Length: 367
Image (tube, rainbow, N blue to C red; front, side, top):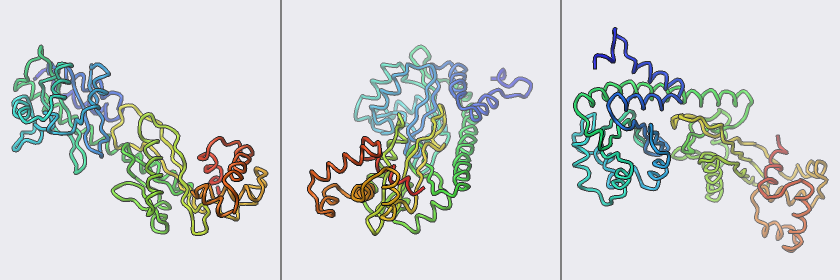
């Protein structure tokens, strides 16, 4: 091992520091770790909702990650590596001797079959970061030609893991700073804004958004933005999933009705540009609230902007507020067919081809 520390320098420190500062270099770092220990693959993996389930493996067939996703990889009765990590009295470096014990209590051979298919039965692992709802680990994955790890290889792995742990902590701090910077930018624009991490949970918010939680039926529970109304909460969560789950896509806005039946708050959801090799702590999406959104007083504005009739403007406002078509028809005393014809006219005049676009247009009238 002396060759790794020539003249008091430690190239592992520089390698993993570079990965923290330029995350695309993580692949290079875990590949170098694998090569130095005579292993097929290096791995950095996250479990739990706080880690959003990522799995980075060097020099591996791309489909292994997809196939791993079909198995509950965090279940100790399926994944012997997870089970070995939970053994009583486990050492800091868990290795093949612990895997042998863990394999005896598996309820299914699914993960064993995966390891056989990709020749990754052996290796060793350690925790880099652990919290109440997540764990990030580092591992060596070894094949039949590599054999089991010996003590020297595990000692080198332990040394490298110390630098990897520091790198994860540094990148976590940098990514959390991204929440603060983005929240600060939206604060200067005086907007109510919630920033979401890779799981869809709120990782930061502007002061105006925090104030909105105390003056509206919106709240944050277990990290999720929610409403006191279950139907609104379901709509919020559907849009959150759209902007954080890969591939991130356009999400429908969510309108929260006010006491008068108009739109009191319009929530819009925007995915942020994805960064390869970012850890789960970086901002992944933004929810922006438009407060004081359109109500009856915007009828004239809608009429003037899109040349809607008074009836059409009224329908557009109440549809954006989440009122059902049946309720709108009943409120206006018209048949379902009459309402359908009026909606066709509204879509033609506003250039919309679906309801969510109309909701967004009505909400933007308050900006």
